[in-house]
Length: 269
Image (tube, rainbow, N blue to C red):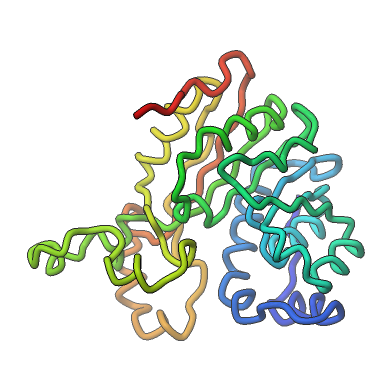
């Protein structure tokens, strides 16, 4: 299976016919969308009949790309996004089912999806934004995912060479780590990263959730693109990224080998 070979300009024009979209976001993230699809496609022989759920689909940028590659796609996001006329028009043309979900923690909106009917769950650049206990959500994902199906995770690498793990001066100054206090107070909840993971953390995350999950792919990924912000650091970045642990992105694929155990975690105080 070959991903759809489109330039970002060609891809962007698909959205213009349906009204406005966030073209800046699309231009910035399109290389990631293409890379994620290409990585998944490298071990997927055929998209025909493969049902994909794109969690956090926003303006359907990634959903459309996977639909063009031949997958059957459902998209999940906040109601306010899916109320946009341009998103609805595009979804109708591309035959993408929209599932509005106001509360991802409860994930009750996923009740419309039948048991074991989804083959791929895209959870890309979402996990770092979660501020709630996710066990109930993953119970829904376990329910709808078919045996042999996969969860695709992409997220920033905490140990990236330019990441917050190396903020030594901040640490020595007594200002802690993780999210800055200024960001907690000044930014909206999902506009920053509440927790960035290492590859080992994510592997442990899914092993704790269920013995049914098996990690089948776990990679440190290079910069998806050289944009204006990174071009001047290209030589340094290229050198440091020869060490996989310093690469800025993570790509995991978790296979549901069986449905024998379910989600085994029960949150407690």
